[in-house]
Length: 162
Image 1: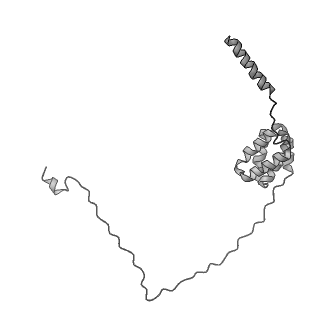
Image 2 (image 1 turned 30 degrees about the horizontal axis):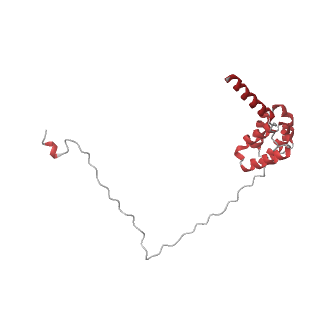
Image 3 (image 1 turned 120 degrees about the vertical axis):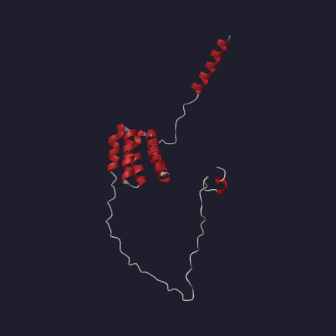
C-alpha cells in the first residue's frame, strides 16, 4: 500500500515538473544590452573588472569581441588593464581568441606625453624682526626623581637582622 502511494506521489510530482515551461533568461538577448551593462558595471566598480568580464563572457560567449571592446573602452585604454582584459577573455573563451585579439587591435594605447622639466621656483625667505620689549620664552625646567634600587644590604633596617 505504501509503495502505491509513493508511486502516485512521485508520478504527480513528475507531471508538475514536466508541465512547467522552461525558464529562459531574457535579460540579455542581444550583445548591446550586455555590453552597456558591462561598461556601466566596470565604471562603477573597476576593482571587479575580472569578475564582470568573466560573467559577461559566460552569459554570451558569442559576443566575445563586443564584450572585450566594451571592457577596453570602459577602462580608458590603460595598458595594464587592457592586458588583464585580454588574458581573462582568452582564458574564459579560448575558442574565440582570434576574435578577441582582433577586437583588441582596434584600440590604440595613447602615446606618452612629452616630458616637461619642472620649473624651478625661487624660494624667498621672510624673516620677522623680534620686538625689543618682549623677552624670548624660556623653556620650563624638568624635575626628575631619583630611583634607588632596594637591596638587602642597602636597607639599614634589614642590616641589623643578619
